[in-house]
Picture 1 (tube, rainbow, N blue to C red):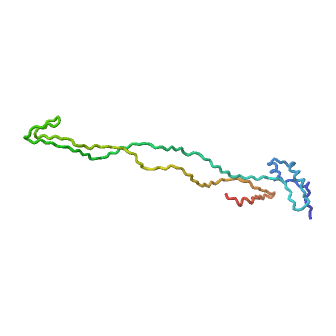
Picture 2 (cartoon, rainbow, N blue to C red; picture 1 turned 90 degrees about the vertical axis):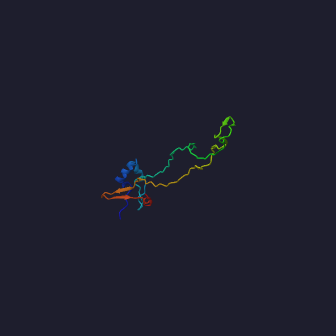
Picture 3 (cartoon, rainbow, N blue to C red; picture 1 turned 135 degrees about the horizontal axis):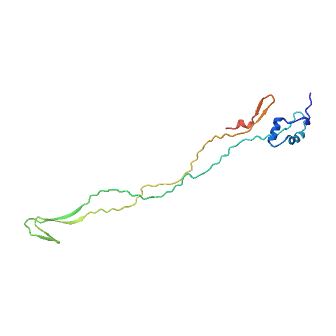
Length: 181
């Protein structure tokens, strides 16, 4: 059986050291992390580097804006209607027969054979305008809820390990299989 490697013989992998430098850590900063680990126990996990994988999350904001300003008022408009009515009048006809003597009616002299009309009554139109309720208009507002589904493409990072043999492995977190895109 071979002995487990000694702590001073472990060096960070070049791929991981690139990640350390990307996160602002140098190999000398990572060395204290490696030297404090007890590697004498088989199966002990020795942390070499720490990568933070990020993902985008959608934030949905609802913006409310006024679509229209409305003003309600009553306006008076005029239309012309033509109404037809038959008016009556009653007259008294006085006819003087031929051969009769002349007759004076008021300031008029009635001669034989003439007819005098005396107005007894006359009908006139009396037009009165009255307001009547023609319709009732109710004004109100109502909130209508509408559900909209908007597809958003979100980026996320996964850990990809490239081996010396050229084999590339991508480690997908278990949470991704539960996500619905």
